[in-house]
Image (cartoon, rainbow, N blue to C red; front, side, top):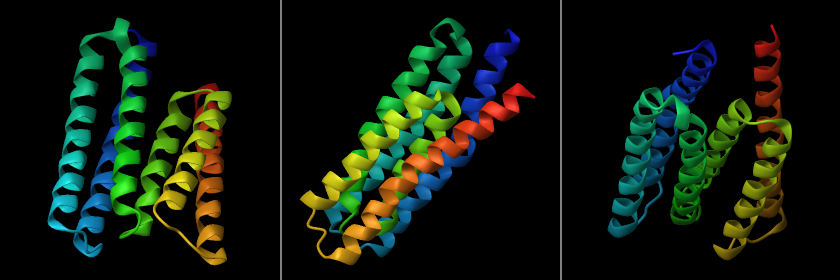
Length: 171
């Protein structure tokens, strides 16, 4: 394994080691404290389990297939975006902190991608958060100010992580 692949694998492992347990804890807290129905709770738990399993498997897959690392990493990003949208859709009306699933995604994107991609993902996820909030009935100036601040946080946190990683790699 060459040094570049080792660095990319270590980055993926770090993201998985810290972000996956946090994401799982967010979903578990949402299920426990969010007063969801049985079907929604089961769906949220199943999605969290599938996400955790896929992320763990993808690390092993990427380690065994260094020539496919970028494709696997990109698949992880798309997979996590998709399942996080679904989880946020299910849980947002019952557990507002679930928006942080997108924050975790932006931390990961900030470590993997360049600045322009971070901005693109941040704008996309902020827009999706606003759309889900609208479609799920968020109402009132205070609630919209909070969702807007959360959307802005996604972009700035991703850029911050991206800059930190860039500085660390530069030495």
